[in-house]
Length: 215
Image 1 (cartoon, rainbow, N blue to C red):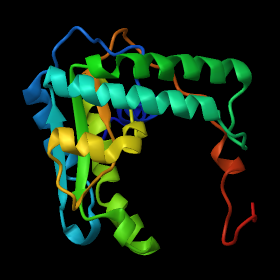
Image 2: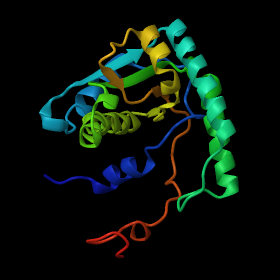
Image 3: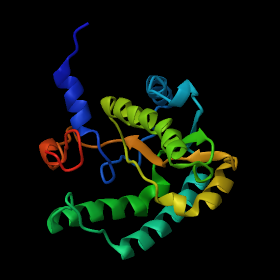
C-alpha cells in the first residue's frame, strides 16, 4: 500500500496548539469527533490494557467553571515566568506565544467543546516506570486524536494548567478518584486556511548516538 507522504508529513508538521484561531462561535460536529476518537483508539497502550476514557464536555455552565479555574492557574503560571534552555524562544517569539496563551486562558470557558483524555489509575501511587506506562497508555491516543481532528479542520491545544485545581475540576465533572486526567483539550474548528511549520532546532543538534553527549 502506497502512502501520500507529503500529506501525512504536512499534517504532522502543522499540528500544534491552536489558541487564537479557535472558532468560538461554531458548534463542533459530535459525529466527527467520535470518528476521530475511533481512529485515535488504534494507538498503542500499555499491555494493550485500553484503560482510557474520554470525557467530552459541551455543557456551558461546566465549561465556564473549568475555564475560570484554568484562567486562575494561568495567571499564577504567567507570574512565575518561563525558564531558559536550549530550545528557549527569542523574546519576540515568546511574546507572541504568551499573547496566544493569554487569549486562550481568557476564553477557555467559551470553547465549543472540551475533551479530557483520562486513564484508569493514579500516577502518584506508581513508581517511575509505572508512571511512564500510565501516561504512555493515554498520550499517544490523545495525540492521534489531535492529528485526526487537524486533518478535518478542527483545532486543539494540549493544556494541563487546570490540574492545579484537579480535585475541584473532577468534582464538577464527576471524575472518580482512581482516574488520572492527562490533559484538557479545547476543541473548535480553526479559522484561516493554513498553518506554518514551527521554528525548531534541527534534530542533529538534539540527538546523541549510543551514549549521552555522543553526537
